[in-house]
Image (cartoon, rainbow, N blue to C red; front, top):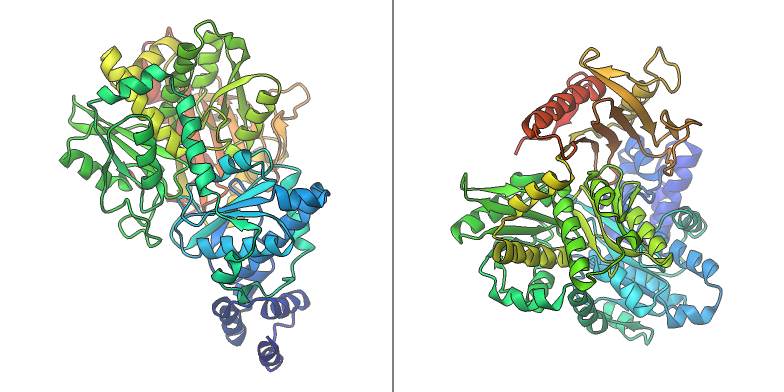
Length: 623
């Protein structure tokens, strides 16, 4: 360290007092030779612009915790940032739980996926907590993300962390923090932890000097797998009626499965065994963990057929009825079904799966409790997801709740309702995230795979229906709901801000004046809700009910014909997303016309509001 500081003294710094202070701190604090060398090379090259980007703005908690590229800098994922984050989280837990015995008795759980540095980041974090006399549960093997929130509840931990960047490209990693209730952190904990991090930036120890053998010699450290794994599958089995579990043995459907080079195969295989289904047909090129993601640089099953080409080939060759695909940390699930009418696989979007699994969760509940009072049951969806559950609730009598985007909001809402004596059956987001029961207060691609397989067998053997046929029946009962969810790519934060500011000052720069129509007045806008500023034109006081966040962009346009379109920035990727839905009534039989109207409106709105060509935005490639 002294040598690096001496070397720094011989270098010409930027002359910017704030930047130079942060440069000196980085060189002093970082003990990873690779990332320290990155910063020293940038200084040597006098690349002050890059250094400002890397050091002046600190990575902050977003929709899915911390997530960024792995490289040197306070804005990125690296050893030093992880140590600082762990120190801040530890200090915050001490503030919230002042009884020291809870630190060593209840402790914290850490899991990690198969990405580069995931295990290292988890071990560095574990060291920070061990040095502070916390009991630490650290998985010794790759952990499916749902296992961490489940472990918090099972082991009564104070908190938990999963090191993962989910479906992001291979260069990224992340840090998902879960609170004592098993759900991802929301306010005030996210801001409280961030403040605690800023107060604990200097590493208290040389955590880099401790090897794995020394780490595991600590009596406060243990691997929770043997306690958590059987309990997880026992809990899964209790969500499925015994009659269905027995009947699964007769299933003649076959399921192709891909883990997208992630860690899901072991967990989903065990789930299938537990629910009495025959083994999945693996996509052999993708079922083993590989942080390079060699066959799919974008390991996101939500991308559709562009990321599922190998799964479709395997399913076709093996004559599989259904394809199941987890993202690399196994918390999300994509599903496709062979369509005999056109000999192709129909890939369901997240809203369609939400409709199917929402129906299935209710169906299973009624099987277990034939005389259940549905007015005490709850289903939840994020505000950008389909309103199909809302339509079902209006018809069937259960409670529907809407939250902000992200499972951290839905899981906390589920826990709130459960504490109020309600039974939470299901929650989903359009980004193929599903939570069936509150066993895991987060999206869970492992249990979702088992439920989809059980549902498919039930429909096939007992109703003579495919998933697609059941979806059609759902629409006939509750109304046709068709949606388009897509995005344009933009890495220029200033451009993003300009685009959204133009929309909220549409009338000659006047605040809270938004577009009033699209296609030259053909489709008029009735209401606008802006969850960046808190403005809602439909409210008497013009104030939005849902929580507001000035750090992210989100505007929802409700049209007079019932179409709802939301524009928002992604919390994990350089994307400007859009979500469009047409909610038909059961009496509306012109489904093709509803679909065409939505397509016309979505295309016009994106062109008029995002202006992709003018602003040089990259559209999502067609499947």
